[in-house]
Length: 156
Ligand SMILES: NC(=O)c1ccc[n+]([C@@H]2O[C@H](COP(=O)([O-])OP(=O)(O)OC[C@H]3O[C@@H](n4cnc5c(N)ncnc54)[C@H](OP(=O)(O)O)[C@@H]3O)[C@@H](O)[C@H]2O)c1
Image 1: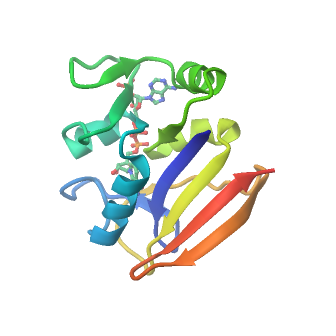
Image 2: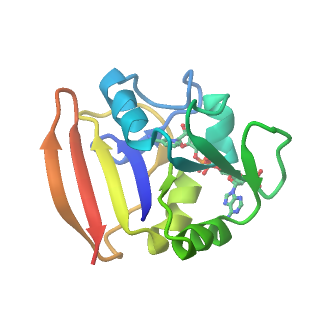
């Protein structure tokens, strides 16, 4: 299955350039959820997100997509996002698309599932998750956790 995994606030904000790790908030429970969901799986992210995190996350295979290149042997560097998605679809392997905004936007037509952490409130930042109303997703499950609401959308 190809999944998008993202945390947004009420306005679909996802990123803040001058924060420590690129995120507009610090939410420990949400980081734990991301870790639990992606541990021992393959995550894919754009170069900007990777550089904002600053290192590969442990115990996961990390694919970084960039057209300009990246010299980092700790991750798999690829230059074509859609080609990677197609590859994982063909071999029937799970892939977790982990941002940022430009990668989410391009991946939306191809993914089977959206895993969205809804962080309550409004925050400061400049990067937003793209609107996904035009794609055929329906809300399958919504769970109130201690500090955020977890939503699972499925295609179709
Ligand atoms: N809240 C969340 O859950 C969450 C999750 C992830 C990220 N974020 C935030 O999102 C922000 C970053 O988003 P962003 O849109 O600026 O950057 P991004 O999507 O992380 O990375 C953009 C870069 O990815 C490469 N790229 C884009 N499309 C590609 C393609 N089709 N094939 C190959 N490479 C491609 C390009 O690298 P080159 O220019 O090198 O070619 C491009 O400059 C940060 O603030 C980050 O913290 C938030």
